[in-house]
Image (cartoon, rainbow, N blue to C red; front, side, top):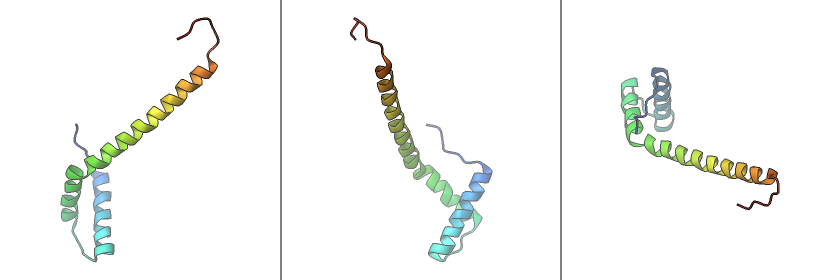
Length: 84
């Protein structure tokens, strides 16, 4: 599996959100450097669970859509003597 990576801009935004969360919810100040370390930890240890859940959800939606397509094709099938 390839490693989950964020752009510099995404990293900056996420780190600011981490800092804001610590400030508002925990009444603690953390610097950009510490927020970056926390982001690295979550990216390596926690993000794969969210990533996999997203894949499972996408697969479920795709299977449902393919089933609907199969039903739609069956509905427009013309009657013949051939039976599958």
